[in-house]
Image (cartoon, rainbow, N blue to C red; front, side):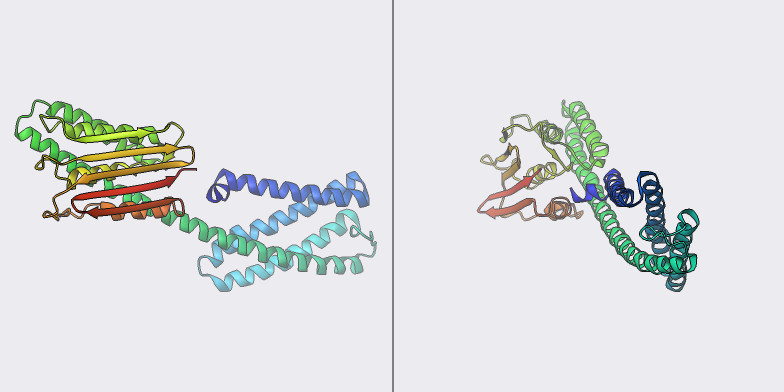
Length: 338
C-alpha cells in the first residue's frame, strides 16, 4: 500500500494534493488580509517560488550533484540557489506589490531587507526538507528496484528448472513411444505460455495458478497407464484472490519430483488449497523413500527460492513451514492476500 502511494500515479496524486492544500491555505490567509484579487496574486507568487525551490533543489541539486558525488559543486550551487531565490522572491514582492503582506511598507530598502531575511530562513528550511525527502525517496526507489531485480532473478531461475523437469518427462515418454506424447507436448505448451508471459506480472488471479497446477498434474499423470494416487482438493472461493505467479506450482513440482509415486504402491501426493476472504492456506504432502536423499544435481530452485520470494513480496504476511517425518514430507503455506 505504501509503495503504491509513493510511486507512479500515487506519488503524483499525493504531491498534487499537498500543493493544492498549500495553495488554499495561503489564499485563505492572504485574501483575508488584502482581498480576493491581491490575495490570489500573492498566493500564486508565493506557491510558485515554493515549487521552484522544492523541486529545483530536490530534482536538480540533489539528484544531479549530491547523488553523483559532486559535493563541492552541490554545496556552491545550493548556497547560490538558496540566497538567489530568497533575494529574487523579496524583489518580486516589492516590484509587484510595493511592500510585504503585513505592513505594505513603501520604503523598498527597509521592507526589502526584512523580506529577504524572512525568505532566507524559510527557504533554508524548505531546502533541508526537500533534500531529506529526495534522499529518502531515492533510497526507497533503489530498494524497490533491488527487490524487483531479485524477484525477476528468482523467477528466471524457475523457468529453466521447470522446463528441464517437464522435458525429461516427455523425453521418457517419447523413448517408450507412449501414445500420449502428443498430449503431453500440448499440455507443456499451455504451461510454458503461463510461465513465459503471465509470470512477468506482479500478480495473477489465484484461479490461473490453480489452472496451471491442474495442467501440470495432468501432464504428470500422462506418463502412467494407471491413475496415480494424486489428490487435489479446493475449499472455499478462489475468484477474488491475487497472488504472485509461480508461487504454488513449484511446491507441487517438488512433491512430484522427490516423491516415490513410481516405485511405492502405498505412495501418495495430497494437495489442499483452502481460501477465505483474508487469505489462503496451501498444503502439499507426499510420501518419499527415506533411503533416497537425492537432490537436484543441477542446483534447482528448491524451497529456499520460495522462502526468498515470500520474504521479498509478502514480508509479515505469510507463514511457511516444511516438515519431514517418517516417510512423509509436507509443505504448508499460509498467506494473507489482502
